[in-house]
Amino acid sequence: MTTTITRTTIRVVVPIVLVIAILLLLQGHKLPGGGFIGGVLTTAALVLVYVAYGLDYVEMEVLDREVEPGGGIFERRIVTAYRRLFSLGLGLAVASGVAGLVFGEPFLSQSFVIFHDVPIYHEVELASALLFDLGIYGVVVGGLLTIVSVVGAE
Image (tube, rainbow, N blue to C red; front, side):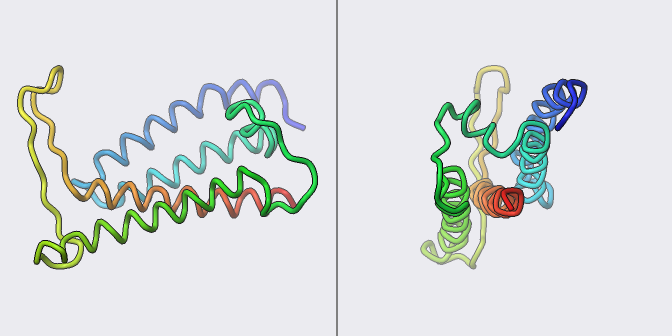
């Protein structure tokens, strides 16, 4: 049972943590650990929601789906979605590493494109390492939330 103060604090803190997680993810191709630390922060934000509101809150209130009664924890849709995110992230990370081999470059080589005359930003650099970071982000979020959901349901 959590208090009103805890729930109110989490409503303020979670969006801030998610914005910082996305910021770290997007600058990860220039600095080490972008996908990993962004994934850990995203997981930490969702764990705060789980602690304050329970495991079913995300599925019922955020995703607006009914929780299916019965069955084990591995059959629940939310855990299946986390496992699917893990698999998708792993596939994206491996594909971004193998893409260099297709073009005759070493494994995990990167390239980038700079877009000029973008409104507000003027220049935007898009690096292929962002795909790898997105893959790692998916692996971390999917894996950690699967573990948290399964352990939390016990």
